Length: 185
Image (cartoon, rainbow, N blue to C red; front, side):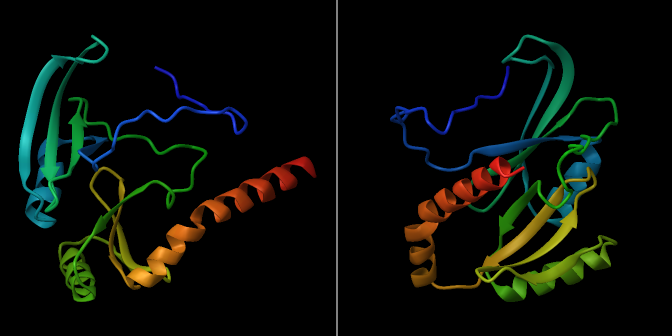
């Protein structure tokens, strides 16, 4: 399967389906038990489902694996594949380590401080609390080298409504700036 690319000039027909929310996001892990201990025991996300198979249903490939699902309070999950070879996913060579991450929402500012203290007590290095002007966050890596962010929204609904109202224009402005910069090279 290859990546889809839509041209900036191609008209698209919407798919006509409402996306209700995230069911799961899947990542590779090097060890199912190590990953379970981190997500279930430390982050308190229960292991709610596991699939053990030798054949990949979508491709028909032979690849023995276990697929683990850890659930968040809203019902969505973070999932992992242990392929049985004790290998973690390799970072993308053209992407800085801070780009690819999973941001998880927590209820209150105090929760960031508590989580930071408990993660550090468990030997996990934590960066932050970082103020991003609309959220505050802490950052750390799981045992698989996946960067995680715990975050709280630090602004009100009025700010977020204005951000929503202006988001498309800001994306268009960035696209134009990027095109101008590339054309001048």
